[in-house]
Amino acid sequence: MTSIKEKQKQNWKRWYYKNRKEYLAKERNYERKHILDIYHLGKKIRLIGNKRQYPKDQKCEVCKTERKLLAYHHWNDKDISKGIWCCVYCHAMCELVDRKLYLQYLKIKEEINNGR
Ligand SMILES: [Zn+2]
Image 1 (tube, rainbow, N blue to C red):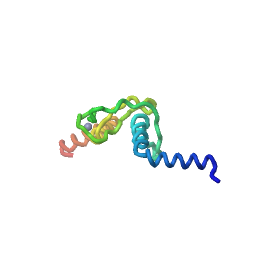
Image 2: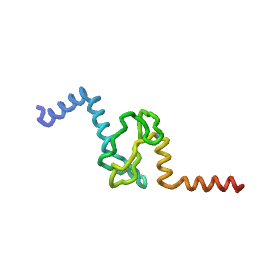
Image 3: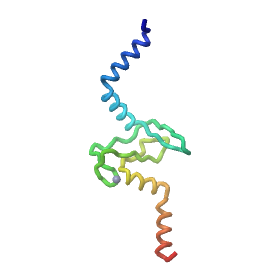
Image 4: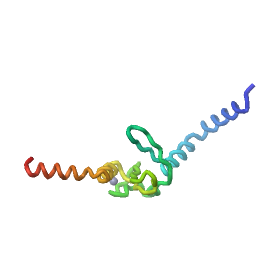
């Protein structure tokens, strides 16, 4: 004899099997809007909040190139609404600028130009 819990589990499985494409798309859409996984000292931390709206035109907010998938760059872990949607190249650039690594690049470039 199957218990009610077992029946519910079977119903859920049947429903999921029939609707999984739509269900997973909704889940991905929710995650894209509200969830941000960051890594700190090799540990995954999940931030939940409201990201800025995903660009309707699918274009990187920095270089305006249309991309299939845009990354979300944020600079405030306490408020993920402060961020921009950008392509993988601009995202790398944003990280370099935020970490001021471009200063290191300019310093090395100048040293090389001055015959280091
Ligand atoms: Zn870009």
